[in-house]
Image (cartoon, rainbow, N blue to C red; front, side, top):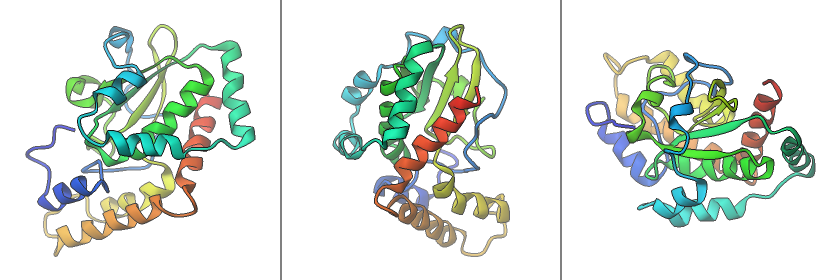
Length: 222
C-alpha cells in the first residue's frame, strides 16, 4: 500500500512488528468491486519463485511459513483435481513488507501450485490501478488474490485475511469509520492489531486451514 498520508504512527509500529498489513479492513471478499480485465498484466508480474527471490525484507519468515504448511488429504485431492480442466489464472497483489502477505501468500502459493493455476504476483506499489479497484472498506489492503479466466476477465477475489482473523478489524471499523472524535484511537487500534496477531497464532496454524477452505469455497463457486 502507498500509505504515506494515511499511515498512523501506531500502525507503522505494528507493520514493523509484522502484525498488520492494512489501514482499513473489511470481510474477506468472494466477489467484490468492479470486475476488471487483467490480461494486460499477464507476464508483467513476478512468478512465485521470483517474488520470493526479490524480497528485500521478510524472506526468511516467508520461507518458514511456506515450510510450515501441511495438507489435509481432502483439500489436497480437491486442488489436485483442478489440474484436469484448468481454466483459471491467478494474480496476487502483494508487497514484501506486509505481515499479512508473509503469513497468507505462502499458503495461497501451495494451493495454486497443487492446482497448477498460473500465478503472478503484482507488486502493489507498481499496480495501483488494480489495487484501487479492490479496496476493502475504502482502504488499500493486501494481499488480494484475484482469479480470472484465460482471457483475463476477473471472476472472483479473496483477501486480505481469513474471515476469523479479520473480524476484530471489521467490528472496529464499523464502530469507528474514522478516527475523528474517537478517544484514545491509537490505543484502541493497537488492541485490535494485537487481537489479530493472537488469532493468527491460535489453533496450531488454524488460519492456514481457513485460507485453504475459503479458497476452495471460492473456486468451487466459479
